[in-house]
Length: 343
Image 1 (cartoon, helix red, strand yellow):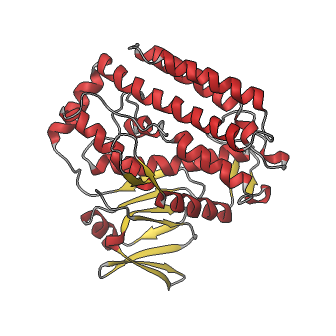
Image 2: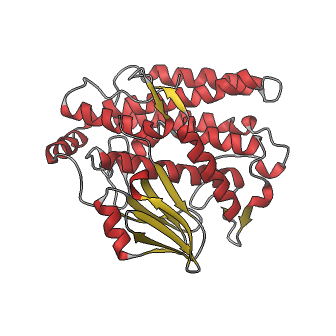
């Protein structure tokens, strides 16, 4: 099993990263703040005004450690990585199947089914854990509706039909998401999903966490030799990593949404931790980003039983496991792609 490695998140503005022997050195104002052995890292994510020496860029690429650059508030900018790994025959098979509408629909059906099941689990957990604090009737009704959506996906369907069911389920799920937010602060009320830019605090948290998850999934796909830009549910579009978005659907509710609810309901983020710009866009403050990053990194250390492998796996390796299962399906080792369904 692949070893769970750390991701180094650099958020302090003006930081400079350099190579020193076998280590990544983090400097602020020419003062060394941190020294990390390269073999302990799975990736480096830089937010805002963070620069790197060319020697570190080459060293990281040589060791298979990807460096990603995002804006200070989490919008993806660029990524530096070494040579593409994996067998070219695997990627050719990926392209062939992505061009086949029937094959694409089967993978999409599996992924959307998992997304709906995992979303339903989030609602069921809320009903179980907070029956006296949430709008029970509304949430229970949507649990039933999501179950119906999942049943409709038990039989083969065309891609457009699958996307329609996915959209319906997402609208119903987010329609009761506000019931799961137990914070008394009215600033954390949720009235619907919005993005690019997010216009409220909850959407700002969701978008930031989804960015982190997509980053990790893309690295996992590249690690097994797949092309993260060629997907099945999400179709080809310039500058979009469609396969990474496909796999992310399985993890939005299980990992991203649950973390957002925990951060808010446990008071780890407060209304003062966000900045509202003149355009109406809402951004996380520097302290809030650090809180989210630490919480996300800690969550990745937790272990759970993988439903297909039937063995305990750290949450941070689930992305790699699903990428590996996707590759095994493409190679013909599996009859179908088994998506991640939270139990």
